[in-house]
Length: 82
Length: 278
Ligand code: SF4
Image 1 (cartoon, each protein chain N blue to C red):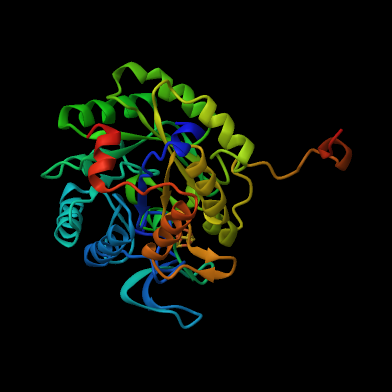
Image 2 (spheres, rainbow over the protein chains, first blue to last red):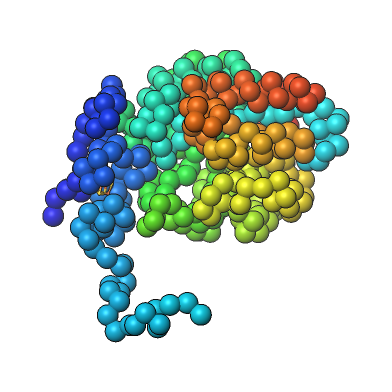
């Protein structure tokens, strides 16, 4: 398993031309610099894991529901509200 | 802790939350991140009227740092750059291990104050800052042993119950930071600020922290209710709608100006220490 999220890069310049003195965590799944708090997920620090802890990763991978629910076995009326 | 305090001219403690750990330069290039940048921002905020400086440590990449060594570097830089402002370290840290959360308390000298999150807080879609009672009590115990005044971070009404849970162990006066914003923080409204103030622990001093566009109106209300206020780029990246804030000092200056117009004197650092029993 790689040490960091596969979508993590470290860059000084962003897609919109923004630039920084120091390299920052950059997410290629959403093409944006990552907020510092989320960057711990990207770096897989503290037992964090993109697959369970990052919605961008799950979206990029088409991971679906965290419970595994895929709608099978339901109908529209059953899935609907009151 | 009341409108009477405002009328009586109780000094207003202004805290500057200079950097935080949630967003950084990717959100507003004016957010200071390195120790040198935070120190420069601290000096300007103190000059503008802030008596407490709320600090988070970061790596040069903007990422969060929790080690005592990085906090030491940061606190040293801030102390060198400022006169005698009160240094308050954050012990917050969503998803960081409990042991790391105590690291910011272990500088030499210890910070005069440190934040103490009173309970859970949701972050993003999958993260929660758990802040178990066991962690709250462990951090509080270490703060007491090191002579550090806790600033109780009350993210919502339930956390007032948690503050009451440890009321007897708190040094006088308890200092409660009432937090308003989205997610699991208190819904930002004047009525909710009144409710939270009404339910404070007996004898507490309170501070108002409101995120984003709520910073200006709710801190102003806090001034009128005899509370204290926290402003800065950690909590609010904008000076006005669509207008990014240029600096922490700019936000402090506005608060000081409003307090002046309302006739509330801004506390010197000595007055802040006296009010908080430091
Ligand atoms: S934001 Fe999510 S998808 Fe992007 S690099 Fe970080 S963990 Fe991976």
